[in-house]
Amino acid sequence: MTVHHFIILSAILFSIGAVGVLLRRNPLIMFMSIELMLNAVNLAFVGFSRFLQLVDGQVFVFLILTVAAAEVAVGLAIIVAIFRARDSVDVDEVSDLKG
Image (cartoon, rainbow, N blue to C red; front, side, top):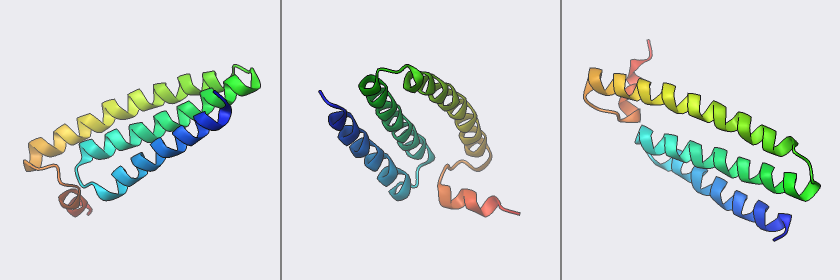
């Protein structure tokens, strides 16, 4: 497999994630789409790291996975708090919370 295969697959996964964020109104689906986009970037980093025979890309992948885990923990806590307060997790209704 060449680096082109990794990049093409990464671009496809990133596009699917971007479409999921833009078209869906459910915050859980939006978070899953963001995670898919982060994993697409991780795949590109690993592909380039393998192609260039460097470890730097894999270090970035580790850092991105750490940030993604923190993002999921905070995001899910916010979603649960909003659901408990409003009995709905619709993104359009949450935008009404602006003061």
